[in-house]
Amino acid sequence: MKYLLDFKLSETRPTQAGDAMLVLEPLDKEKGAAALAEARPGQFVNIQVLQSHGTFLRRPISICDADAEQGLLFLYVKDAGAATHCLCNAREGDVFSILLPLGNGFSFDETYSDALLIAGGVGIAPMLLLAKKMNEAGLSPSMLIGAVNKDRLILTEELSSVGNLYISTDDGTSGEKGFVSQHSVLCRDWKHILCCGPLPMMKGIAAIAKERGIDCQVSLENVMACGLGACLCCVEDTADKGNVCVCKEGPVFNINRLKW
Amino acid sequence: MVDLSIDLGKGLRLANPVMTASGTFGYGLEFADVVDLNRLGAIIVKGTTLNPRQGNPYPRMAETPSGMLNAVGLQNKGVDYFISEIYPKIKDLESPLIVNVSGSQPEDYAEVCRRLSSLERVKAVEINISCPNVKQGGMAFGTTCSGAEKVTSAARESWDRHLIVKLSPNVTDITEIARAVEATGADSVSLVNTFLGMAIDVERRRPVLSTVTGGLSGPCIRPIAVRMVWQTAKSVKIPVIGLGGIMDGRDALEFLMAGASAVEIGTANFVNPSATEDVIDEISEYCNRHGIESLSELRI
Image (cartoon, rainbow over all chains, first blue to last red):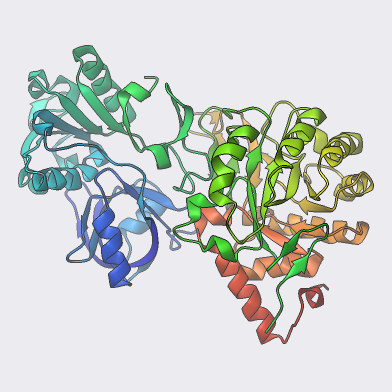
């Protein structure tokens, strides 16, 4: 079930990287709780940013965390353009129309004890809900996150509390120096990789997974409009079905389906 | 209370004048969680062709000031898929169904219409002679009177229910094309489809769309669309269906005042998924506030 609901910004938590963690409360508590309870890791919301003049379409943002009991939605927003700048600088009490939860998230079950979560940049955001849901399934996930330098690493504290965290930075200011694809933890015998980050990073990880026969899921972020599979703008050319909507069939795909 | 119903002729009766524009509402099912599909004047489903089409390569969309460019290129699984897989899921909706039909030659349109004839709940077809994103057919038919006539008469021969022809705005005089399709058997015309446009990524010094050009939609085109509806409504006797950047009830009223008998909501569905229902409510509220009992009173 998808919900179109108004959410009030209850808090903006500044982050180390200069972005913002938005904490949002649904105005309709009952429907909001239902929507948040249905949110799966890797799914996203489509948020309207009326405050940003010149921003016509909604903006798809991955769900960082969803707490149905407290009725809170957490969105980690990178200040990357006019709309996200407005979101990062929104005032407490500002109301946003949000369509959620959208798409198909990461797949896992209780057998995923040999899974490595790999994320880079703002792609680290959805890993928090993923790790928490894996905890609920009795798993303690291993996570490898990367960034340009230690100042761009996000959610390190939160992620450390829900699993084993490994870090790489391009300049070596935190964790191992280099890209996530070069990190030593990758050499272990993983059965599954769940990945979200910049396209070159995901392609690099997918190549390693393919070579070593590791099952691998990646989360795509093709440019989209509706988020519902109606406009057919965000297509990815898949091996099995040709052009499919990333918003509806994805955003998470097994790499077997992709022509990478 | 205002009576919002409208009879467009030949069996196409709408409970209200608000329809969905093809290609912006999928098959309706995509919006079922957030829109009461039974409330809509009609559901016009996405462009359907004789054979499946993969559409154009990604990227297909560029956001623009007050609108967007798209270059989807009629991606769909073909008419037979629609008949076997989609129709059974939507045939019991109260809202009339209209199928938007496209093709690369007049015979394709005729064949799609012929196959759709068996579907009782499809109350009309909307013949698309105005898609700017396909190499063959599409807009090529809609920019000359002879092309528009050929497709309209081919479809007319295999379709005896209501036949809408969707016009392209990428012409010097849209009223000429409207008169041509009226003379060849169209029961109504819908206008406007998208305007041919282009966007360039200046950092990369490359066009944004894989196809270089695409169709511009959204409120940025609305004043031009209103003008074209105004001109066309004065030039033909058949009903005119207005569309082009309608975001809310106020915008829809502009078209109804310009001479449209009904409207289609397109790009707004991406921005406000419940736009269609909101427009119905807002038109109703306006009419009640102004003591208007019938939509025909709105025309200026």
